[in-house]
Image: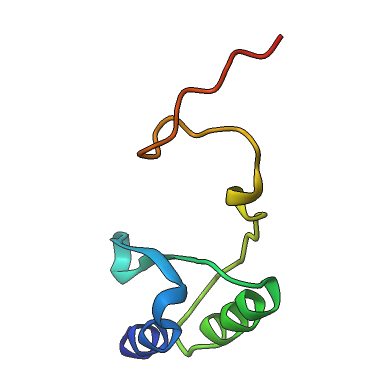
Length: 85
């Protein structure tokens, strides 16, 4: 886990959120939410998944939500979107 923490520090401002959950049998679940170009995210995932001791992993890449035209009411400053007709 020390190597994973070190790698997270190297990723710096790309990290949006992390979550560490203790599971049974000495296993942990680590979730790291990153932002950036897909090539950078894929390279970071490859490095993280190659760390000794990581048993299973994956990457999910989604599009930049800030490019969508509709408002998100849970984000400060956004108004509730008009109903679809």
